[in-house]
Length: 369
Image (cartoon, rainbow, N blue to C red):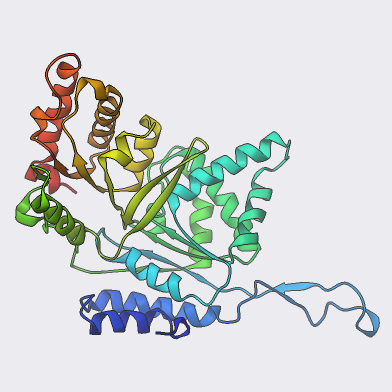
């Protein structure tokens, strides 16, 4: 189907083919995205002004900015916000466009600001905004949320500079703009940014009674053992239950390095044990993952021997981080939690991890908000 027709036509096609269930709330949201799709056709953030030429048409051109209002799509988890934005992004008639998880974007911004400061830039945000705008006329952010004062202070100034360069922003979030950084430190300094968001982005509430991820685990289970075809099938079913669309890799930048979750969709992630624990990852990496997902599926957890001390320690750190972040966890493993580490040195420390895994398998944990 031609991309020029836009996200509404793509949505209708998926419903007709039975790949999506027709949802009235989603239909209203996709119609908003369709209108934005039309406004972006032929969009150029800076066009020559007819009043900007000198005598006989010679001289330096001035530019007048043609504003296109973006969209801020918010609503409860599992309502399909990211899926709808993906349909919009894939069909958007813009050559320079980027779709990124907001947490990953802010990590990247912090790295760019640090680099700019090394060159003694008076305002490091200025070259960062210039570099972003040069590569993306359209920015699509998944899961916009502000968690700390540093991000709160940066994002306001950064977005202002992006808006000044005509960058169009589409964002999904679980919160209304008025609730961003709620009760945060020095929040009054953040309030002008909220007002600017409401001016430059149309705020639309995706009001749906259906959480497409709630209560859909196969048999209500979150831990599948032993590792066999049945466990793999159950994990695939769990992924399809929680992820409201096909997943894509999620790249997170942590302290100048990139880590990748092989599958990610609307705060649901999936990776195997080898990807998460047999690479040199640490607490900062696992914290970045925990911030980026609400549900994590881990495939193929083996029984760990004393010779696998490194992967075992990383697994302990991973589970501790997910536990503290209240992340929903779904696993396939070679054995029950208490048998995942052989007896001997390190077994005592692993006992706490096994206990936490047991708690995270419980219905109470999985059903928590």
